[in-house]
Length: 590
Image 1: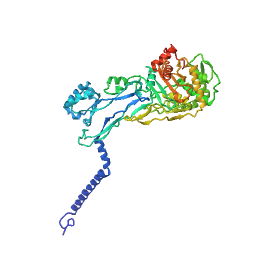
Image 2: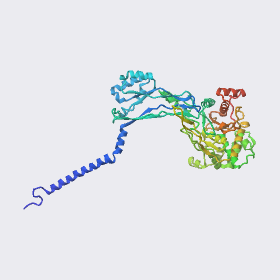
Image 3: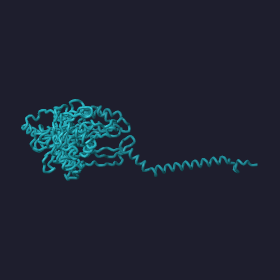
Image 4: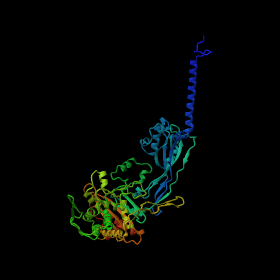
């Protein structure tokens, strides 16, 4: 009798079942691997190829021939290129034993500390074959010497890298810049170049020549008028928004960033407490002080809540809340109407106007109508927005409610109210234009470096319109003229070259005897065409109340601009007409 557990040939049925299971397992495994390989190569293949390409390719910057930069006259370049070279070192190509020797020889050739070269070499092993720039601004003579002894410098190479030169160093350092091109190199996993692999290269595009709206003569005039005083000057054409001068002191010499950089000099610049890299015209904001009374005057002329011809008797102080508020002129101004209050900068009048008639909501509304609390849109980086404080802002930011004292402060341009010098220049431009501000800009046009043809041109663009009546602006301009003829600026604006309308301002900043001196103005006041006018806004971070230089600097600028004089000639002309001109004058407008 046959056992049912065995087949006829004696093979165990259990064994057969096991063999079938193994066969199924093998077939399934092969099928899974097939599906996985299909997914890798077909479905996800493009993505993996892209990643592999990114790993294998390295971008290397190719210095481009930068375009030259000219002032608005397009005759003498403000920034040019000079021939120069940069030296690269690929540590992995020197061998471990030769690296130190190569660095020592290279440092000796370049007259620089070996430590400076070592500091530029990355520690990562994968970057060993990646060329690292260890020096720039190298002369042709040095490169010739290196080429003659190249066998002694394994892993060292060089490339042309034109450097910037600045024929007119100074306050233009806050305006100029540069561009580069790149190449793609194929490298292995260690970052070493694969020499026989195809190399993609994106040729560097030579920069176009840039023509600025800046007039180098006006820039130099404004720069010298400001002198070594921390502050800024903005000179612009209100009819177009074109900036003729943009000065911020202290400035820095851009050439320190070209060629071999002096570490000590760089450290000194970065640690300088006066912040020379800060463009105070657009990147810093201040309390506008009494210059804000221009906006308060416009609001009252437009709203007619306190009739402009109604006088308020200023006795030198005003009781508001639980304290006495003192006018800058403690003896008082006597009876003054709106025009007289602006001319004499009477605090009591504007405190009364702000708290009893306009209120914070209207003050904020008119500040915004003049462009405050928003960027001007200038074609330079880093512009700040300033601040128009509101009850909502104070509650959210400080956590306390708005009080009457806040309205008192904002009514005379103090408290948390902040503007940039450029924003204040735009306020004056709106008055000069009768209600319109054009976007300020420093780019006039872009030209082809070969043919000189204009490739692109900046055209005037309206930034904003105020919606305030023409009549209000006409009267406001007349009132600002009164500031010069019989007001706070009468003793200091002495030029006969042009009739000016403007406003002085002095804001207290933090500690005692630290002030911000302002003068914001336009001229000619009686211009037949808006094209003839310029706006001059000067801000100085004064250290005491004898340093009331802002209107004096503006006086020199107006004299030089309209009399076609340089700084020295303008000062001589003003000194002849007023021998006391360069002497300190005590501030009489808070």
